[in-house]
Amino acid sequence: MIQTWRWFGPNDPVSLQHIKQTGATGIVTALHHVPHGDVWTVEEINKRKAEVEAYGLTWDVVESITVHESIKTRSGNFQEYIEKYKQSIRNVAACGIKIITYNFMPVNDWTRTQLDYVMPDGSEALYFNWVDLAIFDIYILKRENAENSFPENIVTKAKERFATITEQRLQEIADTVMFGIPGEKKITVEWMRNALKAYDNIDRDALRSNLSYFLNEICPVADECGVQLAIHPDDPPFDILGLPRIVNSMEDYDFILSNAPYKSNGICFCTGSLGAKETNDLPEMVKKLDDKIHFIHLRNVRSDEEGNFFEADHLDGNTDMYAVMKELLLIQKKHNISIPFRPDHGHQMLDDLGKVNNPGYSAIGRLRGLAELRGLEEGIIRSL
Ligand code: CS2
Ligand code: MN
Image (cartoon, rainbow, N blue to C red; front, side):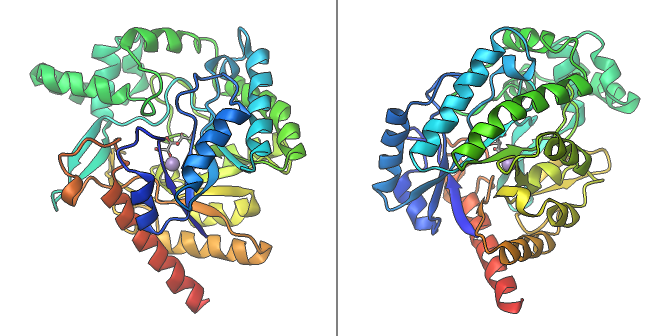
């Protein structure tokens, strides 16, 4: 597989020079400074590409061209934004980059409730806790009917925890849940309330239909310029904040792939996101998705009985990484292809502890993940 690394651009505390030392050959990045919805120009893409190539690396995957909220809600100027999206696809392709990742999560990208969950070995992980999310929803966002979105025992615990919570922890929960992609839009409670309102009349079926519309618009363009699209699953793979989530199970993928049957329509298989849902059998999903997997995120989570989860070591969590890797390698062999993967997140550890890093994206933790995955791959290839 092609070993890649996500780089957030010139402001990323992890430099291209350091990425080079991880052994990754490919870069996964985006034009984070371009406002959501605007066209990525050939000039800007080429400029970033040259920066990457100056270090002997290649820009293999775009992650992400963000889908504007009006496209997800199919309202306002959505058609205009779709046309702009098509233009960005054409421009990315013209610059020689052929894989584009995106997601269709309403309002938020990934959601966590804590960014420095301390592991027994002293490293720090990202963490998702239902009770903390309930505290955010009920007491910070104050969303109408928020209590109905959670099981009774979670609401009871949220009430208890809220009664003794410190101001500081409350602020941490707010900041964490509202954390966006680094360097992109800054989310406030006000902004979020408004954004949620746009989904008042959008249920699961409506969101599915909006995604299907979007795909049937952009896939022909992507087909034409030889681009592979890769939709990233919902993280976490559940409905949250009263919003429908439609990309987190095999049934969802069947819908997505059958409603837009184009060559370009494919998946970013993220084991960390999909693996937080107990009913997902990941090796089985890989087998079924076959060459519809255009890009891969490998990491692990470990859940408890309540469904809370922390980001575990890459080879040690809910997901049997050996089994997933093996299925992926069989797909590569069968189709004679090489699919890019990245270690996705990693722990904050060793000399990175105490440093300012993009949450989940410190160098050493991801380097550990990449090194473990690289060894696993080599071992399986040699034994196949
Ligand atoms: C990523 C996602 O950091 C992560 O969890 O896997 O943020 C992903 O980049 C986007 O959802 C893709 O659009
Ligand atoms: Mn991911």
